[in-house]
Image (cartoon, rainbow, N blue to C red; front, side, top):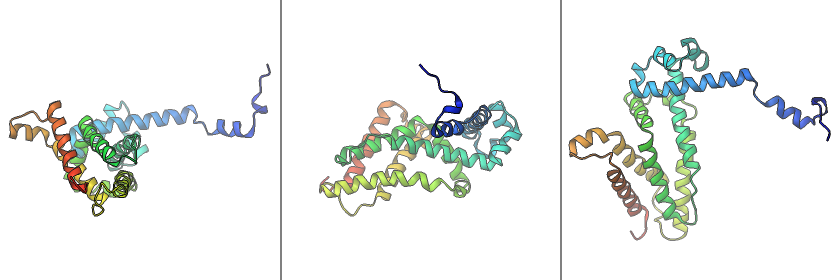
Length: 229
Protein backbone atom coordinates (compact mmCIF):
# COMPACT_ATOMS: atom_id res chain seq x y z
CA UNK A 1 0.00 0.00 0.00
CA UNK A 2 1.31 3.39 -0.95
CA UNK A 3 0.33 6.67 0.68
CA UNK A 4 0.31 9.78 -1.46
CA UNK A 5 1.91 12.87 -0.05
CA UNK A 6 0.15 16.25 -0.44
CA UNK A 7 2.54 17.11 -3.25
CA UNK A 8 1.50 14.02 -5.20
CA UNK A 9 -2.22 14.81 -5.10
CA UNK A 10 -3.91 15.54 -8.39
CA UNK A 11 -4.78 19.19 -9.25
CA UNK A 12 -8.48 18.40 -8.79
CA UNK A 13 -7.91 17.04 -5.28
CA UNK A 14 -5.72 20.03 -4.35
CA UNK A 15 -8.36 22.43 -5.69
CA UNK A 16 -11.12 20.71 -3.70
CA UNK A 17 -9.02 20.88 -0.56
CA UNK A 18 -8.34 24.57 -1.15
CA UNK A 19 -12.07 25.26 -1.46
CA UNK A 20 -12.93 23.64 1.86
CA UNK A 21 -13.58 26.31 4.49
CA UNK A 22 -10.96 26.64 7.18
CA UNK A 23 -11.51 26.75 10.91
CA UNK A 24 -11.83 30.54 10.91
CA UNK A 25 -14.43 30.53 8.12
CA UNK A 26 -16.42 27.79 9.84
CA UNK A 27 -16.39 29.70 13.13
CA UNK A 28 -17.53 32.87 11.37
CA UNK A 29 -20.40 31.04 9.67
CA UNK A 30 -21.40 29.42 12.97
CA UNK A 31 -21.49 32.84 14.66
CA UNK A 32 -23.57 34.30 11.84
CA UNK A 33 -26.02 31.38 11.89
CA UNK A 34 -26.33 31.61 15.67
CA UNK A 35 -27.18 35.31 15.47
CA UNK A 36 -29.75 34.61 12.75
CA UNK A 37 -31.46 31.93 14.86
CA UNK A 38 -31.49 34.17 17.92
CA UNK A 39 -32.87 37.09 15.90
CA UNK A 40 -35.69 34.91 14.55
CA UNK A 41 -36.82 34.07 18.09
CA UNK A 42 -36.43 37.63 19.40
CA UNK A 43 -38.24 39.30 16.48
CA UNK A 44 -41.01 36.69 16.69
CA UNK A 45 -41.47 37.41 20.39
CA UNK A 46 -40.99 41.18 20.54
CA UNK A 47 -41.67 42.32 16.98
CA UNK A 48 -39.36 44.50 14.92
CA UNK A 49 -39.55 47.55 17.17
CA UNK A 50 -39.15 45.60 20.42
CA UNK A 51 -36.51 43.24 19.08
CA UNK A 52 -33.47 45.30 19.98
CA UNK A 53 -29.92 44.56 18.97
CA UNK A 54 -29.08 44.16 22.65
CA UNK A 55 -31.73 41.45 23.14
CA UNK A 56 -30.56 39.60 20.05
CA UNK A 57 -26.88 39.66 20.97
CA UNK A 58 -27.73 38.56 24.51
CA UNK A 59 -29.87 35.68 23.20
CA UNK A 60 -27.10 34.68 20.79
CA UNK A 61 -24.47 35.01 23.55
CA UNK A 62 -22.62 37.31 21.20
CA UNK A 63 -21.85 41.02 20.94
CA UNK A 64 -23.70 43.94 19.37
CA UNK A 65 -20.75 44.69 17.11
CA UNK A 66 -20.97 41.21 15.55
CA UNK A 67 -24.53 41.93 14.40
CA UNK A 68 -23.37 45.11 12.66
CA UNK A 69 -20.34 43.27 11.25
CA UNK A 70 -22.33 40.45 9.65
CA UNK A 71 -25.63 42.18 8.84
CA UNK A 72 -24.85 45.89 8.68
CA UNK A 73 -27.82 47.02 10.75
CA UNK A 74 -30.85 45.81 12.69
CA UNK A 75 -32.95 46.24 9.55
CA UNK A 76 -30.45 44.23 7.52
CA UNK A 77 -30.68 41.45 10.07
CA UNK A 78 -34.49 41.52 10.04
CA UNK A 79 -34.54 41.29 6.25
CA UNK A 80 -32.27 38.26 6.37
CA UNK A 81 -34.51 36.66 9.00
CA UNK A 82 -37.48 37.05 6.66
CA UNK A 83 -35.48 35.74 3.70
CA UNK A 84 -34.32 32.75 5.72
CA UNK A 85 -37.90 31.92 6.73
CA UNK A 86 -39.06 32.11 3.11
CA UNK A 87 -36.06 30.07 1.95
CA UNK A 88 -36.71 27.28 4.44
CA UNK A 89 -40.36 26.99 3.39
CA UNK A 90 -39.34 27.07 -0.26
CA UNK A 91 -36.72 24.32 0.25
CA UNK A 92 -39.24 22.15 2.09
CA UNK A 93 -41.80 22.58 -0.68
CA UNK A 94 -39.28 21.76 -3.40
CA UNK A 95 -38.49 18.55 -1.51
CA UNK A 96 -42.08 17.31 -1.90
CA UNK A 97 -42.38 14.09 -3.89
CA UNK A 98 -45.02 15.18 -6.39
CA UNK A 99 -46.18 13.20 -9.41
CA UNK A 100 -46.96 15.54 -12.29
CA UNK A 101 -48.99 12.74 -13.88
CA UNK A 102 -51.35 12.74 -10.89
CA UNK A 103 -52.26 16.46 -10.75
CA UNK A 104 -55.28 16.17 -8.45
CA UNK A 105 -53.51 14.13 -5.79
CA UNK A 106 -50.35 16.24 -6.08
CA UNK A 107 -52.29 19.49 -5.71
CA UNK A 108 -53.86 18.04 -2.56
CA UNK A 109 -50.35 17.26 -1.29
CA UNK A 110 -49.29 20.87 -1.89
CA UNK A 111 -52.27 22.14 0.11
CA UNK A 112 -51.55 19.74 2.98
CA UNK A 113 -47.93 20.88 3.00
CA UNK A 114 -48.81 24.58 3.18
CA UNK A 115 -51.36 24.18 5.98
CA UNK A 116 -49.05 21.87 7.92
CA UNK A 117 -46.06 24.17 7.48
CA UNK A 118 -47.95 27.19 8.75
CA UNK A 119 -49.17 25.19 11.74
CA UNK A 120 -45.74 23.78 12.63
CA UNK A 121 -43.87 27.07 12.14
CA UNK A 122 -45.76 29.71 14.14
CA UNK A 123 -42.68 31.97 14.13
CA UNK A 124 -43.09 32.31 10.37
CA UNK A 125 -46.67 33.51 10.81
CA UNK A 126 -45.69 35.92 13.60
CA UNK A 127 -42.87 37.42 11.55
CA UNK A 128 -45.14 37.89 8.54
CA UNK A 129 -47.70 39.61 10.77
CA UNK A 130 -44.97 41.91 12.07
CA UNK A 131 -43.82 42.77 8.57
CA UNK A 132 -47.38 43.45 7.43
CA UNK A 133 -47.77 45.89 10.33
CA UNK A 134 -44.80 47.70 8.79
CA UNK A 135 -46.51 47.61 5.37
CA UNK A 136 -43.85 45.29 3.96
CA UNK A 137 -41.22 48.03 3.86
CA UNK A 138 -38.40 45.70 4.91
CA UNK A 139 -39.09 42.73 2.65
CA UNK A 140 -39.55 45.17 -0.24
CA UNK A 141 -35.83 45.89 0.09
CA UNK A 142 -34.96 42.21 -0.31
CA UNK A 143 -33.31 41.15 -3.53
CA UNK A 144 -34.33 37.53 -2.93
CA UNK A 145 -38.01 37.73 -1.98
CA UNK A 146 -39.29 37.15 -5.52
CA UNK A 147 -36.97 34.16 -5.90
CA UNK A 148 -38.79 32.31 -3.15
CA UNK A 149 -42.33 32.84 -4.44
CA UNK A 150 -41.58 31.85 -8.03
CA UNK A 151 -40.90 28.12 -7.43
CA UNK A 152 -44.11 27.71 -5.40
CA UNK A 153 -46.20 29.22 -8.19
CA UNK A 154 -44.25 27.25 -10.80
CA UNK A 155 -45.13 23.96 -9.06
CA UNK A 156 -48.82 24.81 -9.08
CA UNK A 157 -48.61 25.94 -12.71
CA UNK A 158 -47.12 22.60 -13.74
CA UNK A 159 -49.87 20.70 -11.93
CA UNK A 160 -52.58 22.86 -13.49
CA UNK A 161 -51.11 22.39 -16.97
CA UNK A 162 -50.97 18.63 -16.43
CA UNK A 163 -54.58 18.65 -15.25
CA UNK A 164 -55.68 20.66 -18.27
CA UNK A 165 -53.87 18.24 -20.60
CA UNK A 166 -55.68 15.36 -18.91
CA UNK A 167 -58.96 17.27 -19.22
CA UNK A 168 -59.64 17.28 -15.47
CA UNK A 169 -58.75 20.93 -14.71
CA UNK A 170 -60.20 24.11 -16.15
CA UNK A 171 -57.92 26.04 -18.49
CA UNK A 172 -59.00 29.49 -17.29
CA UNK A 173 -57.58 29.32 -13.75
CA UNK A 174 -54.22 30.96 -13.08
CA UNK A 175 -51.50 29.43 -10.90
CA UNK A 176 -51.13 32.78 -9.16
CA UNK A 177 -54.75 32.80 -8.03
CA UNK A 178 -54.63 29.20 -6.85
CA UNK A 179 -51.46 29.98 -4.90
CA UNK A 180 -53.13 32.99 -3.28
CA UNK A 181 -56.25 30.95 -2.46
CA UNK A 182 -54.19 28.29 -0.68
CA UNK A 183 -51.94 30.79 1.10
CA UNK A 184 -54.80 33.06 2.15
CA UNK A 185 -57.04 30.36 3.60
CA UNK A 186 -54.18 28.60 5.36
CA UNK A 187 -52.48 31.75 6.66
CA UNK A 188 -55.63 33.48 7.93
CA UNK A 189 -56.72 30.47 9.95
CA UNK A 190 -53.33 30.00 11.65
CA UNK A 191 -52.52 33.68 12.18
CA UNK A 192 -55.92 34.35 13.78
CA UNK A 193 -56.35 31.04 15.59
CA UNK A 194 -56.23 32.57 19.09
CA UNK A 195 -58.83 35.30 18.56
CA UNK A 196 -61.04 33.09 16.39
CA UNK A 197 -60.97 30.35 19.04
CA UNK A 198 -62.27 32.84 21.61
CA UNK A 199 -64.80 34.31 19.17
CA UNK A 200 -66.17 30.95 18.03
CA UNK A 201 -65.89 29.25 21.40
CA UNK A 202 -63.86 26.33 20.10
CA UNK A 203 -60.21 25.35 19.99
CA UNK A 204 -59.09 25.91 16.41
CA UNK A 205 -55.65 24.53 17.29
CA UNK A 206 -57.04 21.09 18.12
CA UNK A 207 -55.79 18.42 15.67
CA UNK A 208 -59.32 17.57 14.53
CA UNK A 209 -60.10 21.26 13.91
CA UNK A 210 -56.94 21.70 11.85
CA UNK A 211 -57.69 18.54 9.87
CA UNK A 212 -61.24 19.73 9.20
CA UNK A 213 -60.01 23.10 7.90
CA UNK A 214 -57.36 21.44 5.77
CA UNK A 215 -60.01 19.22 4.16
CA UNK A 216 -62.20 22.29 3.59
CA UNK A 217 -59.34 24.11 1.80
CA UNK A 218 -58.71 21.06 -0.39
CA UNK A 219 -62.41 20.89 -1.26
CA UNK A 220 -62.54 24.63 -2.01
CA UNK A 221 -59.48 24.58 -4.27
CA UNK A 222 -60.61 21.47 -6.15
CA UNK A 223 -64.08 22.95 -6.73
CA UNK A 224 -62.27 25.96 -8.20
CA UNK A 225 -59.95 24.11 -10.59
CA UNK A 226 -61.84 20.95 -11.57
CA UNK A 227 -63.81 20.94 -14.81
CA UNK A 228 -66.52 18.81 -13.22
CA UNK A 229 -66.32 19.30 -9.43
